[in-house]
Image 1 (cartoon, helix red, strand yellow):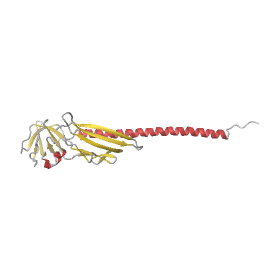
Image 2 (cartoon, rainbow, N blue to C red):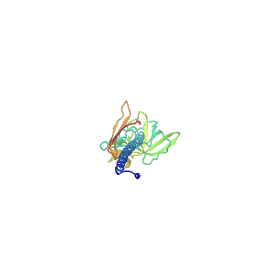
Image 3 (cartoon, rainbow, N blue to C red):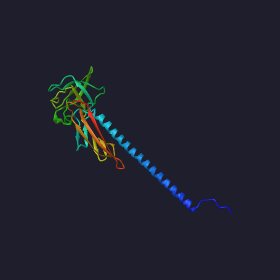
Image 4 (cartoon, helix red, strand yellow):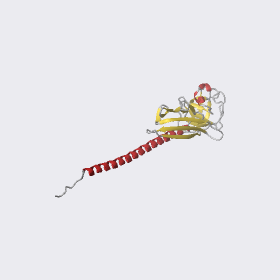
Length: 241
């Protein structure tokens, strides 16, 4: 009598156990692979966010009116006044003089609505506070032969109390830009730019004889898995009064 072909119960049980062990090992390997992939995606996302913020802030700071940068709110915010256009003035205005001749370093037409002009500012308040008597409000700009004659009827007389070594003047509108670290994000004038920020701070060092002003930014990101990544970046503010 021939023996029937097939598997015994013990063979089936052993096969199931072996297949289960192999499947368990494979699933663990896949899980580790997925976890490593997710970790790398989180790190890359943090790097991209930090790079985006640093690039945007750096570009705007390089076009800020000199000495208009201010760190506030326990180093959680930094604000500055952007330049509409810079110019070289041909002669320093005298007291009671209501015009100034300048060579504007831009081909774009300036919006004279609440446009201000300042020479050699010392602080952000010089650009914003009328009682500091440091700026004039522009009335008209007439261009002839590459020279712009700026007229103003300001009560801040004398507004220009200090000459500029580089003979520079700056046009601007009194609307500071502010970057703030709030909660888990960084906001630019109430618009959120990045998230997943655990903590951070701004600091600012004024210019010296040897170097330009420097803005320091420190940001720490926290991933979904609790991993901390910290970035530190220095930006030179190259404009000079």
